[in-house]
Image (cartoon, rainbow, N blue to C red):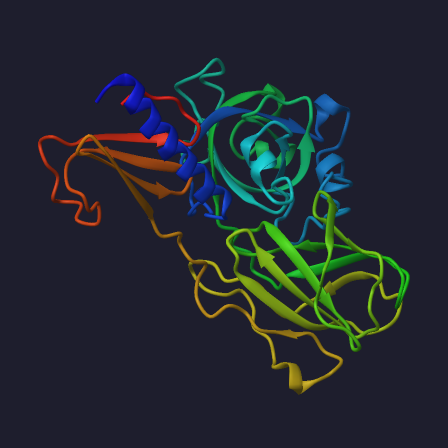
Amino acid sequence: MSGRKGAGVLAAVLLIAFELRRAGAADSLPTAWRQGIATNYGGAQDGKDPYSPSFGTLDGSCGYGELDKSKWPYWSVGALSTSNMYYSEGPVNGCGECFEVQCLQNSGQFAGRCNQDSNARSVTIMITDSCPECEADHLDIQALTFNKMAPMALGRIDIQYRRVECTVPQDLNVIIDQNRGAGGWIRLQVKDAAGRGSVKLVQVKGSNSDWESMNNVWGASWESTSVPSPPLDFRIQDDAGVEVTAFSVVTANGETGTLPTGINFQFSSGSPGSAPSPSSSSSSSSGTPNTGSNPIPQPQITTAVLDDTTITTTIIGGFFLIRKGGPTSPTTAAATAATETVFWVKLYENITI
């Protein structure tokens, strides 16, 4: 294959990959590991008491407000850099997403700083805040949680991290901080979403209206400028397109506060909550959870042929597989040919085939 024709086919492949990615293919969880560094906030280095709320446990940019340390995620929280891929690509800047973080003892510029016990070097955090001054793969973690991997006084450690499911042991909550009543303005945050954690769509329905989409204005905050009359139902969709519906969450004009929904998304080990049917009570919260675990995105396959050479791409999460030559159907993985060349490529990565 000539360089010019090869580049043309690759450009077409990349365009197809980009369009499929943009169409909504969500990464399966857990994602691949990424390396970076972690710092901590809310401790002595900030002049703070780590047992008192501050920054992401008090008024983080996601809008969840002050977090109760006795409830999930028990202050196991952190902040994403505003240049992190999960911040920029996520529907709500990564708010609510969960990450497994591991301290790296034997590599990087801060080697040797992890806890001596090799079983005490890993935590799972939920994102509640952002860090504009942080580099892309820099996580800022609440001090007590950081201390479970390395002494908080050390300040910085080398890490690897990946996005994982949020195994929330309770129902999803809707935090309503502004509610002017029927016909007025309402603002809310969706918190404690299990499974993927990230919410990409919130719709509201009142006693006298159909479903209306709310606007994501910042962080995890959603607004509507003309709220319908209560009781209010909410339909919530995660970043993989899975929906749950909570009925009669708001029962009175102007009601605010943290309101339970009686439902949540499922994760791989099951659903953390259940709910009665909508008809059981017009004043209680109920819902219709999805009937299976969050779907794992299926490979998306495209094929191009140039000068009798088959170029097949398989989109899997944030990567795609390029097969040059070989079998025309990639569904038979074992049927590889000697003429086949395989590339695992990150989206937007430049290669020559």
